[in-house]
Amino acid sequence: MKVFSILKQAIIPNSRPQEDYFIISKKYPIFVVADGVSLNFDNDSDYPGHSGAGEAAKIFCEVVAAEAEKRYETFKEENLKEIFELGNKAVLEYNISNNRTKNTINYYDFDLFSATTSFLLIKNNKAYWWSLCDAGLLAFRNGSKIFQSPDGWTNSPEKWQEIKDEKKRFITMHRDYRNTVNEKGELIGYGVVDGEEMAKLYLNIGTLDINAGDFILLYTDGFENYLNLKEFIELFVKWPENLENQLENIISEKSKENPDKYGREKTIIAVSI
Image 1 (cartoon, rainbow, N blue to C red):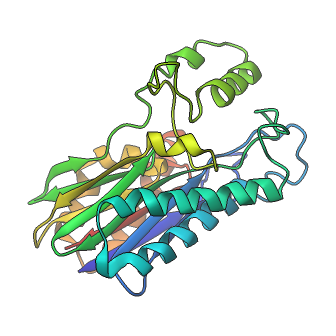
Image 2 (image 1 turned 180 degrees about the vertical axis):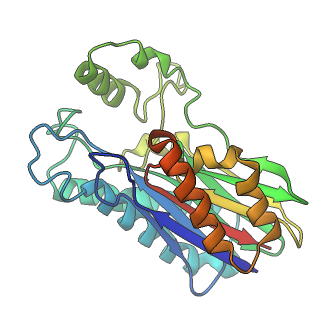
Image 3 (image 1 turned 60 degrees about the vertical axis):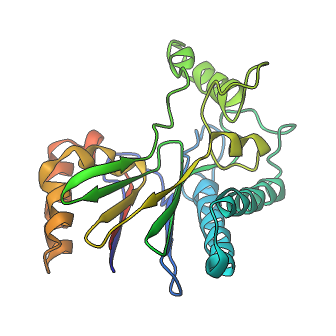
């Protein structure tokens, strides 16, 4: 098994501090990434100098990786939701320690610290995975895509995108659609790790049979546009000795070409089976 990882800071103006975080277990083939959700910062003087969302991403990854290692020898699909909930609870405690609760936040410049995430554990030719929101996972066989985690923005985002006023749009989005369901219990928004119990309802989980020669990519949303580039995917198919250098060249070229599309903070973990 070969593993490659890279976290690139954003190059676009007014970038936030590091808000992505990832862990590759030193004991087992366990991988987790998280992307702290950027906050507005009208009145928060310590942000963007320091990111509580980035810290939440780190806390979540650390708890998830540790709990997955404990369960590895007997790991089953039902453990996915269990360890997610433990990581989510740790973020809840972090938010509470910063006086960020449903009773104190304004859903704009003082809001819950949160993160998106994807996860992979490989055992006995099976990949156990999850994805939440716009962090995802892709699997390839013989250079062709055999699996992609579900889109995390499928539940009517146009309901808040239609709001013209930026502040009102953010407040509505976070208050009414983050980790929420309607009166029928149907998903109506999007899910993130923020300590809210309903986050688990938005979690996509599953297993995937894998063969020697397959490769899997875990990524945060900053890499999404790269996944449509043939030359980007072919790097992992060929896995050359200078993989890192070639990848850096593509990122540098594309980031200069279109910073908004390719220059945002991004993390990817590539696992070749």
